[in-house]
Image (cartoon, rainbow, N blue to C red):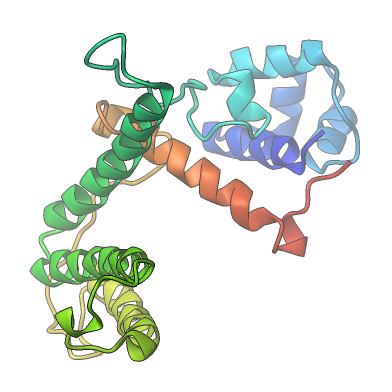
Length: 231
């Protein structure tokens, strides 16, 4: 059982603002057993997982850490324009949807914060990512002249990294109202980005962002010994 289950189970109870004793009674288990579940000391049976999912109004996939969407949904694959399109085209369309939908939420949240600086820095960061990726692909073809860009191939990567690290700090600063790192102080109030509220706030895009978050979370977990899943 993945450690995601114990973490999520405890989180849902805290969100509901009920005691462990109350939750245990409603879930028809002893408080001691629920405590073991929430602390990852015991693995529940399937019947408890289903009961807990119904009790907290989430999917079993969410409870087990298989999806960040509380409904357990996945971003839908766009329907190909015609039946003869090859499978790779459908996969490309799906990946494009994940990225564009996710970026839409980030940019919209920055715009709604009232901070023009935050929107500018976020746009700069996303642009730098695209610049780097394009340069990688461009350089893969020896026929493409390096002179098309002012910054030489040997230097652009490190310079982009430096630019992006500074922009990351400026994004964090701007999100809190600026006042440092060359940013002016200003009012900044981000809309709620609670994972529970995303599907309501962004019904068209939330599933894509949640899937991106899940994919990246899974991919970086192997490098973080503190989040290793229990066997």
